[in-house]
Length: 122
Picture 1 (cartoon, one colour):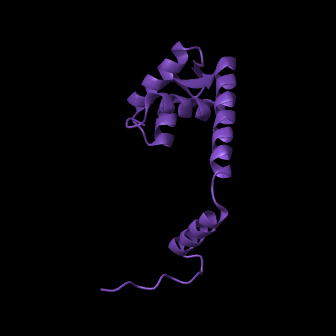
Picture 2 (picture 1 turned 60 degrees about the vertical axis):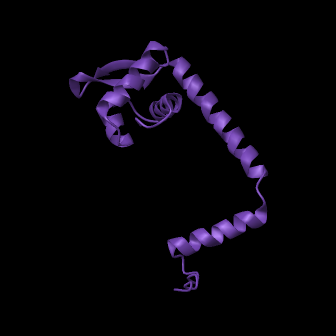
């Protein structure tokens, strides 16, 4: 997450907490293969913006759970809808034959039983 654009990292973390059960910052960091400190910074930004809050964790007194607020849920839904619209627009611009070629290539790379490419010279 450290190498990500900070706004994209915030949107991704907001989507993650909006779509799952309450989790600690450490749990979220492990799930994202990120440092706890980097997730904590983003989480505190979300809290400061009123998009998330830290709630008591019944399993651990000191490690609170990050949960979305109503505003955070609304933002996560709006962001997801925007992503769907953008993906659909990109998909409409693709050529079907290009997609078929890409599918064949991916199947060969994955080894789906399709014939292997012929070895090149040398």
